[in-house]
Image (tube, rainbow, N blue to C red; front, side, top):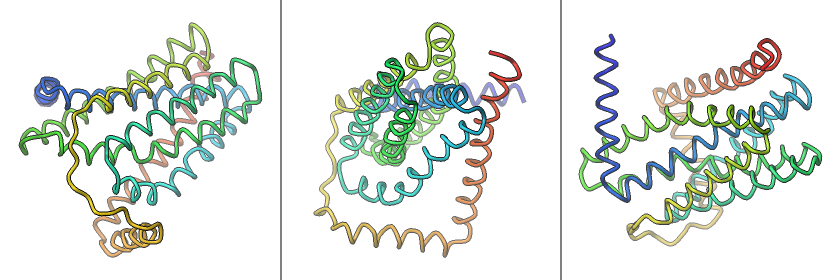
Length: 265
């Protein structure tokens, strides 16, 4: 088992190294890692702010009001994002998140109502729902061979896992040295850095059709949902993903309670 894990890590490291040698792929991958490290740091800071504001109940409610609007908007936002340049989508996501989270840091620093922090967190979360699909659509355009694309997907998986460690670790250090506002500043900086990296990519998109009217976007979204419902295996995969997301959401609330209330950290 140890050998198998070591082999997987070696394969992931080799894939990442091959991506890092290509400037555009390197920028795209580091942009992804920065964006998701920022997201995990934001989750930690918001959990602390909400717990101080209203305990475990507030943590759960804040997560709910943050992700429900994003979940409702996601199918339509993804359909819109699929009709414009992928790099521009990623840049705008980074900029909007940087502005919203930076404003949240100002709100905390000025000791204003935390309600403004929650609203700004929702504003930062909604556009982020299109980041991963837009990034997934960008990668093939930056790869020259199927093998390179396989390595790019493996590299992104490695960075995705690393971000779940690096983001909370940075948040913990800043919470220990300063406070949640410092974590928000970090999140804003990483989001802006992610946008800057994408802006430096030499990306030539394929010719695209004229953007569809809003009514067509709604129709396409509905058609996609019907296709999912008609495919039992696809629906089962999405259902499993939903169960995993619910479990992770509950664990995020429980983790805050354990850290602050039980461990007193």
